[in-house]
Length: 154
Image (cartoon, rainbow, N blue to C red):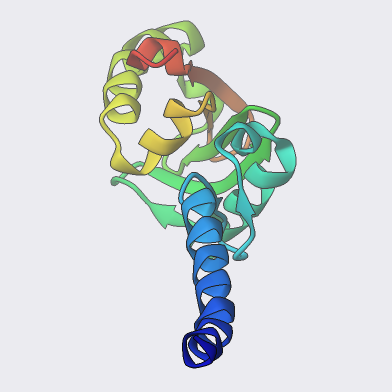
């Protein structure tokens, strides 16, 4: 009996530590890890603080040319929204019909956003994507907002 108690005292702390570690792991599996290593709940992903951290990480790789005429200059984290700031590098804003530009660009932006593996986690957790376009003179051309609902998320 004393020998079994001795083993119990040896294995009990190991068992407690193991259960605590497993519990922490299981609880954390529902968390989202930000680029700075911080873990947040999916509900917190919509916060401006979390989205600013994510935008700062994306901005490290910018500016980036996305096609012959367009460059992604920066991303901003706002409350419930990631704003992507694009510049049309070969044309001034006055060379565009703003309404026509938005009308023609919206379907493609919607398709790209809804099918983007990178945006999936954001849209799934209520974060919208705002695409803001400017001419080479940095004056606005138009904005397109893609909401989670447009991509089939609640």
